[in-house]
Image (cartoon, rainbow, N blue to C red):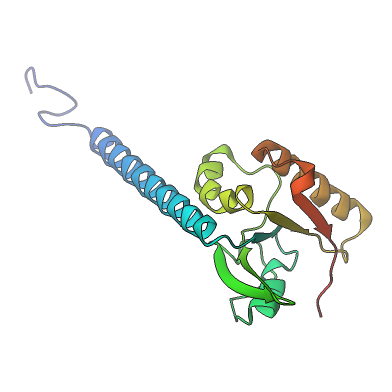
Length: 176
């Protein structure tokens, strides 16, 4: 075959084309994540301009956050017992005995979230950072070991996010 570049001749290896495609895809996803972060930051600024208190429902996955949100906000968001049924945050204006507030339903926490996923979930978890009150939900129907594991994991995530203990309260409501 003579002196041809590469294996069996001219051109490039398929892996090089695949690599370039993946690099373009990664860059596109990063641009999308940055756009989502900017959009959420703008929403936070607008909400603060209204002067209404912000309440974030958060906790371990499958703790009943969306169920409570649906009851308080008179919504019918999708509820499922499976992890990550809520993949995006929702905020609604809610009246608590004459006091208006913005109630936000967030995604659930999970143990040992892979580092590659942390950045994608940061945009939704960031709602917790901007809330005036963080309502931390725990499912009390779990056995003690499971309850303790989920509790400690959630507290670790709060600490990793830099949320002081004074900004959140614990709730162990079991909705039927």
